[in-house]
Length: 608
Image 1 (tube, rainbow, N blue to C red):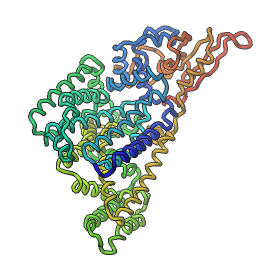
Image 2: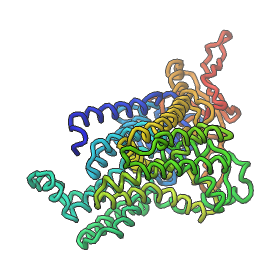
Image 3: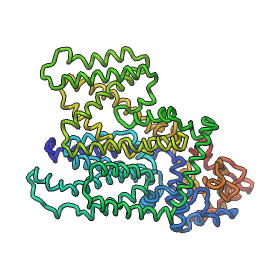
Image 4: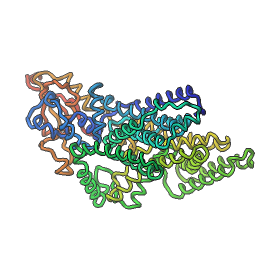
C-alpha cells in the first residue's frame, strides 16, 4: 500500500467522508414524509397503521394524545411491523426507536440514521478495499465514487432500512473474507511480505470472526429480507474456493446459529406472517399485470415475460454503474445505441493494441477523439448521452486490464466475488419476477446491496485509465466529465424533489404537514376546544390485510398525534363528513358566544 502515504490517504479520506455526509444531509428534512416513511414512523413507535392495536383509543368518540401515547409492548411493536411492513426490518425499526428516544421525533431525526449509515458505508468501503486489495489509491477512488453515487444519496435521505442494510451487508462481506484469509493462513504471509513481525494477539480470533459474521448475518436479514442474496453470493464463492473442512464446519455452525436467531422472528415475531403476505402480494400484482396493467395507482405492471423483464432490467443495470447512470431510460433507438457500443468497442481495441507502445503511429494519438467526434455527428438524438454510452466498452476493458495487471491470484478470486455481488441480487429479482409473472418488484432499491462492489469495479477502471498515456486518458476522461455533469443534474433533481427514479415523485413535496399541524395545535389549543381530523379512507385491496375495525380513517389522526405532547389531554375526534381538513373548534369564543372553526391544515393532494 505504498501508492499513497498513510497521512495523505487519511487526509483524502476525511475529505471524502465530509463530502459524503454533506451530500446526504443537505435538504434531508426539507420534504414531508411519504407513505413508506409514515409506516416507518408508526412502526418504530409500536403503533399499527389505522390503529389495530389502539382500539381502546379510537372506538370512543373522543380521544386524547395521552391515550394515543399509552405505553407500548413488544407485542405492539410486532403487530405494527406485521401490518405496516409485512414483518420486515425489525432490527432497523429497533435502531430507529432507540435513536428517536434520544434525539426526538422529527423528519430530520427520523432520517439521520440513514444519513449516518450511508456515510459509514463509504468509510467501510474504503477499509474493505484497502484491506483486501492493498491499495490506498484504489480505496480512495472507490470511496469517492460511493460518496457521489445518486442512489446512495437518495436513499440516505429516506427513513427506511436501505442504508443500514447496505452498510451491514458490506461489513458481512469484509468479515467473510477475513474468515477465508484466516483459513488459508494468509495473514502471516502478508506480514512476512511486508517484513512485519507476527503479532497474533492483535488479530481477531477465529471465534470472534464467526461470532461477528453470525451476528451481522442476523442483523442484515432482519434489516431487509433480500439481504440473503448477499450471503447466497458468499456461499457460491465458498463452493468454488474454500477447501478447508474445518472452516466449512465452522461456517455451517455459524449459519445454523444465525438462521436460528432469524427463525425466532419468523416463529414468534412478525415474520410469521411474511410469507403468506408475500404470496398474497404476488397473486395481487399478477392479477393486475394480466387484467389491468396501466389502470392502477401502482404504476405500470406488466406480465413477467422475458421481453417485459428485459425491458425493465436494462435501466436497472445501466444505473448500477455510475458511468452509465441514466442511460437506460434516456436513450432511444437501437441503431444509435448499437453504433455507440460499436465505436466504443473500436476504441477499446485501439487502446488494447497500442497501450504499450511508447511511440505509436501518429494516427493512434488522434484515434479516440476522432471516433468520439464521428459518433456525435451521426447520433440522431441526444448525442451527448450516446457519447457517454460509447465509452462503456472502454471502461469494461479498463477494468479487465487492471484485474489482469494489478491483482494477485487471491485478489483475482475476490473479483469473482465482486461480480457475483454486483449481479446476483438483480438476477434474483428478475427470476422472482418471471416466477410470479409480474414486473412490480423489479426496482433498484431491492438489489442496492450491489452498489458498493460496483463502485470498486469502477475504481479499478479509473485507476487503470490514469496509468495510460495521455492520448488515451484525456479523451475518455473528457467523456467522464460529461457524465459527471449528468450525475450532478440527477443530484440537483433529488434535492429538488423531482427525480421520480429515486424520490418517487415528479413534483416537490411540501414540508411535513402533520408536524406543522401539530405545532399549530400546540400553539392554539385551549381547554374546551376540540380537534377534528379528516376521514380520508384508503382503498381497501384486501379484506384480510387492509381492512380495519374503524368505520372512519385514523391515519391522519395518528400522524398528527405522533408529534403532540405525550401527556396532552387535547379533546380530539374524527369528523366522518370531512375528507381533507384538520380543524380546531374553538369553544364558544366567537363574537356571538358560539364555537368557531379554525382550519389548521388542508391535506388535499399532500398526503403522498
